Each structure stands twice: as C-alpha cells, then as structure tokens.
Image (cartoon, rainbow, N blue to C red; front, side, top):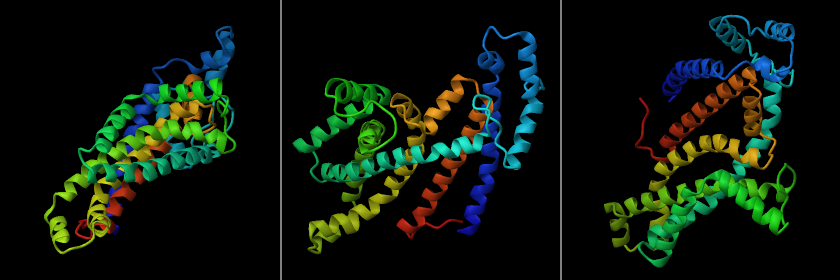
Length: 305
C-alpha cells in the first residue's frame, strides 16, 4: 500500500507540471491584464510601469520559470486585482465552497442511493419508469438554467428565499439544490445499474435459496458489492462539484472559490487563476487517490502491487 501511494504521488508530479504549463500559456493568449485593470484611457507610461512592476514585460518562459520557483517556496503569487497574496485570498473562500459542496454531496448520497436501490429492486414497475424519466430530465437541465429558475420561482415570485449570498440555511437551500440535482440523477442511474448487475449474480441467488430475508440479501450481499463502482462515481463527482460550483456560486453570489475564479478570469488576474488551477488539480488528484485506497477496504480481493 505504501509503495502504491508513493508511486501515485510521483506520477502526479508531471501531471501537475502539465496543468501549470497549459494554464500558464493559455492565459497569456487572453490579452493584456495591465490594459484591463488600468483601463483603456491609461497612459502608455503608466501601462509600461505596471507591466514592469509585475514582471509582465519579461519573456513568457522567464515568467513561467519564476512561477514554478515561487510555487516550490510556497508563494502562489500576488493578485493583480486585490493587490494581496493569492493563497490567503483562496483560503478565505474555501469554507464557503466546502460548505456548499458537502451539502450538495450529502443530498446526492442520501437521496440518490435509496432511490436507485428501490428502482432496481422494483424494476419495470411504474416507480422505476417514473424514476428513469425524472433522471433523464435532471441530467438534461443545465445547472445555470436550474439556478435561474429557482431564483425566479422561490425568490422573485413566491418571495420565500433570498436570491443569493451566504448566511443561514435559507441562503444555502437553492444553491445546494442547483448543484446537487445532476449529482442525484447520476447516483440514481449508476446505483440502479450496479444493483441490477449484482442482483443477477449467482451468490445472490444462493443467498436467497438459503432462505435469507430479502433485507439481509439486499444490504449484506447486494449493496456491499455495489459500493465499489459507486465509490468511483461519487469520488469523481466530488471533483466535479468544485468545477460545477463555479456556475452555481456565480449565479447565487456565493462567496466561494468558484465565484473567486470567475472574477479572476474576467479581470485577467493571471497569478490568481494559475494558483487556483494548480490547487484544484492537486485536490482532484488527492481525491482520486483516496478513492483508489478505499477499494482495498471495500473489497479485500483488491490488492495494490
């Protein structure tokens, strides 16, 4: 296990380098941040001084090497928009994103898994047909459209919930629903498919032939063996929650990492965007590693070489 973890960490190093390389050079194609921040009416001398102060006049390769060197020193850059170090700005917004992501994940697991199991057990009944129809609809509706629809219905028309911002439970309901809808439908679909596959296995028929109660068969034999592919899907969707939160946080003015990223992109705040991409890539790699390690505990037959 230890050798496997070390190998995965070593394999992630070139991936992170590739991520920083792509992000760094693509950002340079978006335009001049000095012109955007100082405005079109800024004098050429002021623009040149700003570029010189922030190292934007240096060759791109020199800027990239300096960026990598600073990363190894724990320096993720200085925000051009906020005129503050990027890392503290990012850390300040992490609790908001984690709160939203964990709420959406909890809704997805608590709602999605039971519905998926129920739909598989009662296959081809009216409940199963209705569930599959709702799942198809939920996966087809874009997150930004659902978010706007929730605001129109519950905030503008019914005046039951605030339109955005972070605060109490009433401000968390709509963003978490908008973010978790696709996750719920995804978990329902994969839970149903996985449980149906396990129900057709010989050991399930043997358990029933022994006279075990259906609840025992379902929870001890079926659900336990269905958890491995479900863990994969849920692990991948956790990473997707952070990318999906960009749209959700922007729509609901949620002060998290997603909205922070959009603001940085609009203002061409290169150091901030580079740092966010690198940190989020590291988080996704770490989540995938945790999911792989969980395999060995969910199924003792799995061993890591």
